[in-house]
Amino acid sequence: ETPIEQIALPAVSIQQKIALQPSIGNNWIEGQILFIDKFDNVIVNITHQQFEEAAGNRPFEINIPNSLGIYKISKNYADVPKGEVLAMFNAAGYLELAVNNGKMAALFGLRSFSSQKNTLGNIQANALFYQAIRIFFLN
Image (tube, rainbow, N blue to C red; front, side, top):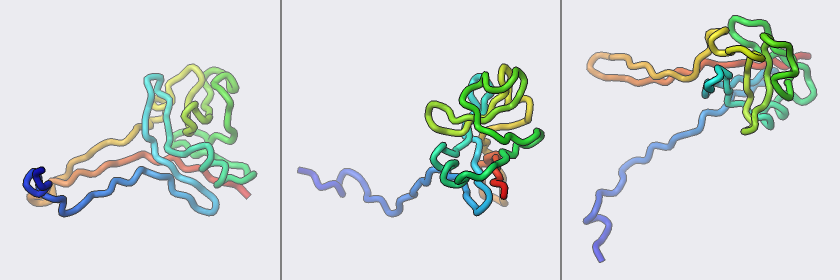
């Protein structure tokens, strides 16, 4: 048998990747837009369980840039009239923002993460930018 050191060099350092998690305060939770689906619905990294734990039984406002807030969680798209915004938890358990029979992301200028490259001297720096959605808990 060949010792592993003769086949490959041992790893000197390990870079641990941490899944993007929402930030939670006493009266708010903030998630990031992870994905925009083919219907222009916006998927946020806040799970139903995280939302319930943070909210308790308090009323809330989902703060949408360029829009009025959302104050209730819908069960499906038909819970609101056509053209109205809604929030619901999708089959995977994540917060989904949508417009009934419309395009949420396009209407409100929402986007998922983007990669930007900046040149700092001779160093190329990559940074990921996520657009945030904040939910405020009232009372």
